[in-house]
Amino acid sequence: MKITAVNVIRANRAVYAQIETDEGITGIGESGAWGALDASGTQIELYGRYLVGKNPLDIEHHWQTLYRCSHFRGAAVMGAISAIDVALYDIAGQYFGVPVWQLLGGRCRDKVRVYNHVAGRTEEELIANSIKGKEEGFNALGHLNLYLDEPASMPFRDNNSQLLYKAERRLAKIREAVGYDVDLCLEMHRRLEPGFAIQLAKRLEPYAPMFLEDPIRPDNFDEMARVASHCSIPIATGERINSLFEFEMLLERGACSYVRASISVCGGFTGIKKIAALAEAHHCSLVPHNPMSPITTNAVMHFCAATENIAIAEYPNPYAASTADNLTGTGVKLRQVDMVDEIPELKDGYVTVPTKPGLGIKLVEDVEKKFPFRPINVGIRLREDGSICDQ
Image (cartoon, rainbow, N blue to C red; front, side):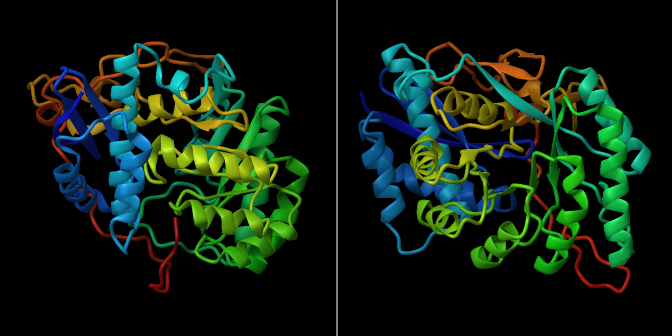
């Protein structure tokens, strides 16, 4: 079997690698280079020149070639490698007639525990959506931003005292509303400085959050380790790094309890399995990062099925309306689920493991026309004084 073409599909806010073979088998994978999708698409095209004519089943060799052929990497490059790697595994699964998890060593679980995305532009909305998430069957609520999901156009005004008081008050209200049979996964969006993060964590400890994600900017592993060493709340981080060697440095420093590796930017199945083994050696679990389309969600489910040290997985709602209008003229808003032929079942906070060969999911025909590509614009929220506010 030989690769005959490597195509780039740009649809909605996603970039895919679609790999065709001379046996009629086609694989699909998604780049997670969220802020650099255009560049990542170009990199997929470049790597396609190498892949055409090669055997798609030599996955590890292709991964090593693409990873080591250049002196420079980054999210755009690793997103391209990730998309290609997932697509190659999709091809291999279809070729051998087995789901990808079988190629990765077989199942460790039949279903994957997931947390949803809880958002709120006001305190009342945040609490109401937390209650709604529990009512929908989730036993873990995630992406909980105690500083709210206000629009970037609104200047951020809270001072330190307000940051401490409001975060504690909101978490207390959420905990009271949903009880202690629900895990709460806090997303701090890299907003705090190390000393303040430690101070805040102590205020939040009584409400038993499952983890505190990215309380500070994740660029400095030593500072993240300092925060982790002073907090009883487990730290989760890793979505912004994409190299096995960076994860080794993170784990060696004891900078996190939960590794937030992203399969669509850390090297696909090949890369994330290496990271999972590294985390296992440090007695750490993974909470796979996934704000992507259903293609990546299926890939994550295969990875979780075949990997023992998974704590829980992020689950973006595939039924949420897209901001892209349906071009058929019906006025109906398209959803992420409308981009693919089917998705796994979600029930009582668990997603069933896909069982069809390969990834078990395909993009719908003419997805690029139905979901015009929407590049990410440059912009950021500001504080009241005009300085940058991470959110």
